Length: 283
Image (tube, rainbow, N blue to C red; front, side):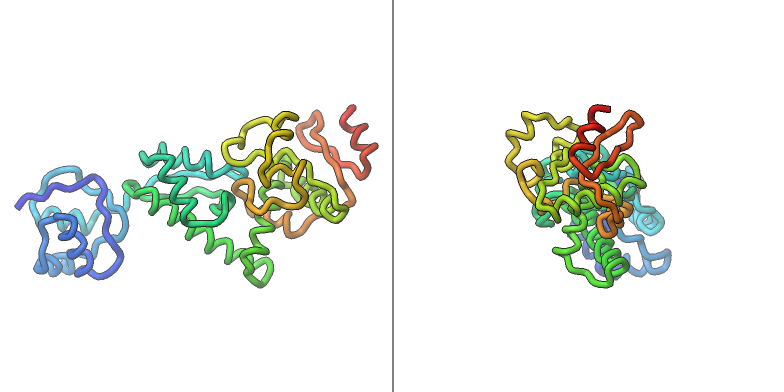
């Protein structure tokens, strides 16, 4: 009997018997005898497979199933970007609704952002929002734990994500990798003195990732990310982070700076006193 296949076909992990059962439950005309044919020609790869988009005989279908490769597409989450915009990238790349991606993220992690590492990912075409977000979170959380054990020797999720929150502000504020430990030092120095962080980068959360922070915005924003009004580190990361930013958060530079301002070179000029800071602004 001819078999009509979809362009992408999900093959579950497990035994050939499990694969046959899965196909039958999804209305494919296969049976217990077909497992012997699959054992002979080779076990199918698990995941979403890129199948021929045509009607085939059973033998051709089983052969294609055995030999087809995973249908993957690359997507990149750049350092500092927020899930709000990464979900838009995922939506466009995989034909999914942004709302479904946002819902899946909210259901699978207590954090608002910063869970998924800035990296390039190869993801299966045909997967739904729940699968994609689950895969990204699972892979990233394993990496968070791995890095914590490597750098700190212990994994305490609450402690680790405080570093990630600091790193996410560093990621937004530093002009380059060299500046990251210095910006980190400013954050710790201001906290030690009981000063608010007063950093624009913390307000570049969610949909405001690429929005210029204005005095009006500072007055009206009542979230945890408004470090002009709220003291300390936001509970949630502002956006995605790189390893350089995390390293800087854990190992700040040994300097006494409390202020910095962007200069004509596109980097920052740091200062220890407000008087010096005002002079640097004037320059």
